[in-house]
Length: 616
Image (cartoon, rainbow, N blue to C red; front, side, top):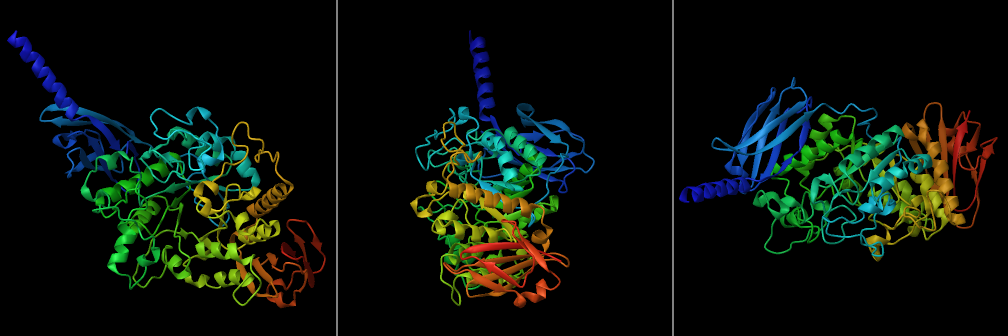
């Protein structure tokens, strides 16, 4: 009896030891052979996993170092993958003494060789930005799941509405036929929080698509189908913060994994302090260590393990899905040294990629500071090719509402372009009239269709990479101060039972149809126009409310004329523009098809735009 009791006790003890070393996570879950950087760091998570000794045996893979940290539930394993290492699977065993208590099968895959991947995006593209939860509900069956805290509620402007990746897949033809060449998705990774999770910016798992949007495999399907349609894919990345529901926030690897304060310490949201040579340490500290929100812990990228984790996560998604570009949320908010290190590592692996950073700053010199290649006095280089042109956004949203003046009206657009000497590469700026955080452009111009057309004409012909927010093409409205849910409304036709279907233009008003056809024609013309993509830009000072710009090469030229007068048509004498127009004798307006047999005098209706292809 005693012997039987002893056996049971020993068995229970063995099971207890096994439970204590329960392996929960290994990230990244897999990797690839043939990468430029042979080093890989695995983050291993499991109860008391640091009590174990990990071992593996695979030709070409070497364990360089094993790191134990503050929390015994974590191990970090440094691997080196040789240049000749072949794809395959191997087992990582975790032992206590001679006893194996856990194991993980790790796979090294061959590189992604699918066609049309890693193409980057540039000024030849027009980007369509959409929020997956608000675009189209392709699979109502995943609107709410057992394991996700927030359930669907389409009646709540800030709730989950059910849009998903399948909805995007279903309408790729709409996006490409409208004329867009690149697609930027707001974040779609898991946000398992109790409320307001539809936007995707409170990530709870950096390696997992939110099940209410679909699966990792479904995202790869979306990318593959998009590439077949010559549509590039841009993924939204967040490095400043994550969600309070993230599994590693619930059990921090180290105390300095996030910025911790005695009480809630909110960021001052003052991005200029990052570049300010006179900024106080207090202000910089509040900017960089303060939290965005109570449910978004602020990550401390000075932690080398976290920095490596975020860099590897980015490379994992690029390789796994075959991405073409990245958009970085809140670029100035993480430590700028980390951002530079991250971008340098990504571009070293994928030199044809493009990255745009969200530098939400109104001042041009400070915006320019964050673009890669800037000649900053402090020597800082972000290594990020592109930044968001918020100064141009501000001018676009004001100029068409103003009476003409020395610095008002069309002068606002002129003055923004006149400062392009500040940027390392103005042609690689992301230009936009609205996005998911701002008033809808149609709202900003007082729901005036003529002003709307003028703004889009300028946006799609000026320097830079244009981005259009979903629904802008059908005059969706909304003010940011009403709440973000009102500038992120559902795209009509994306849900069963919608009485209006913008995908088929069914039920749209006459103005909406007019706007859509205008945008579609302009986009599809622009798609194959090298003069707009890569031509030089020359503009002339606005005169009596008329602003004239040109995009031109040695043999071709496009003339863009904006008349900001509310009531007066203008007879535009073109002798002033001879330095560009010399040698061109006729032209054709892109939208209307109007042919100009001579170019000496051009009639420009009030509050209108003309885009004229000049002919020799």
